[in-house]
Structure formats: structure tokens, C-alpha cells
Image 1 (cartoon, helix red, strand yellow):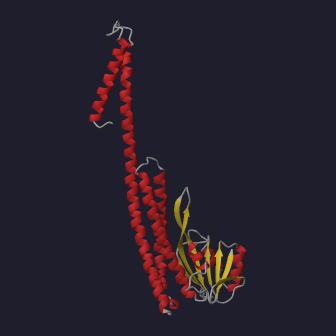
Image 2 (tube, rainbow, N blue to C red):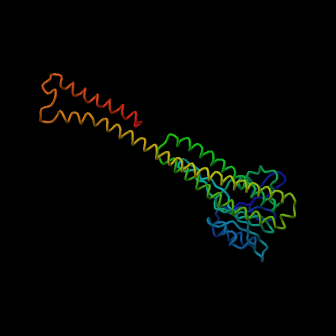
Length: 312
């Protein structure tokens, strides 16, 4: 899908044709759409296809013939539903051309929807260098927001783990831990791209842009630190609660074993009096009551003894 946007004095318009100073947003484009944009803008199709590879690393690439620049970064995505708490990252390609800015991604993202809403007062499609930095800054902010969500979700799961002996909560924590690994890896590769951007002439040309890039680098570093801290905490929490769950299971097994022992006593007593030999009370009219009494007293004595040993 291809969408073309152009800023006006008051708002953001969606148009049909590509002109100078527009923003071309491509979401999972097909081959014909890739060919169309490549032809109209004199663009290497590999620049577009690079962002469609989920495993593509963050980097900056140049085309000396056309002067186009590809900035490839990883942006966060939330895939949260009733069955999953996964967060993931996908490549976002930002192509800087003399005519316009092109963004390419496999899915619609909150990073770009933030600009599509038209509520960003300082956003203009024709300010290409500023727009690129705003995208990167928004991505860093979104990482921080998702990291806070992960921390909150992990705290809620920990509360459930205090009273649970099932694997469901541990699996949810494992999903969050995987998300933190994805985030940490992507943030570190994005940091390299941001440092390289500081050396670009079109960034140094405008002091405000340089300041915005520095703010983006700071936010990205903060996200890296948060991801590392949350990952360490989550890893320790999973180990601790795995031991707690195992210990809870041992307690239950110990209780069931103790109950089994106590319940076996009446069976043993009745077995003695059921033998085909002379036994006490066999001629007494109250023999059955005596046998029941012996079994009950034996159960009480064993129960008290096991309770003192903290087996109940």
C-alpha cells in the first residue's frame, strides 16, 4: 500500500501524485508498487526491499549515482492479546531523496501514525532532515513507553505467581523476557546509526536538527539502560519464582503423603482384626467400637506427631 502526504500551512493532506516535498509511505508494498516508486523517483529498488526483510540490520547506505540515502532502523511493535504479551521490532526504511522522503515498513506502526494524525505542529513533509529526526525521536520515545508497559505487566504477573503453581505465568514472563532481548538488540544497533548521523552534513546544517538528534541519542541510551535493567530483574524473578513453584509443589506432595499415612492406619488396624485367628475383643459385644477407638486413637497420635515435625 502506498500513501502520499503533503504538508500545508494548516494541516496534512493525502494526495495522489508525487511532487517535491512530499512524504511517500509504503506499507508492505508489492512488486508493482516498488517498481512504480523506483521509476518515478529514480530509486534503487533494493533500498525499498531492504526494509521488507524482517532480519535486516540497522544501517545507513548510500547510492553515489543518484545521491539517495537509506537509513534503516528497527522500530518497536506491540503484539499484545489475551494469549500473548509479546513485543517485537521490525525494520523501518527511511529513504532520503532530493525530491521527497520515503518510508517503508512491513506493518503500520504507531511511529508513523503519530505523524499521519496531523496533530504534530512542528512536522512538515518538506523539512526532510527534520522529519527523519522526528521519526527517530518518536521511535525512541515509543521504546520507552513499551518498556514501561513491560515492567508494569511483569509486576502484575509476579502478583499472580505468588498464588499460582501453574506454568502460565512463567510462560508470560518468558514472552516479556524475549521482548526485552529484541528491544535491547535493536536499540544497540539503532545507537550506531544515530552516532553516524551526527557526521552528516544535512544534519549539521541546522542547529535545531543537531539538537534534536542529540536528544534522540539520549533517549535511545536511556531505553538501552532500561531494557538491560528490566531484563536482569525479569531473569532473576523467573529463576526465583521457578524455585517457589517447585517448593510449593513439594509442600503439596508432603501434605498428601502425610494424609495418606494417616488414612492408612485404619486399614492396618482393621486388617489385624480381620485375620482368621484369635484376636482381642472378639467375644465382646462392644468389640467393633473398641476397634474403631484403637484406629481413631492411633490416627490422632500419628497426626499430632507429624504436626510437631511440621509435616502438616
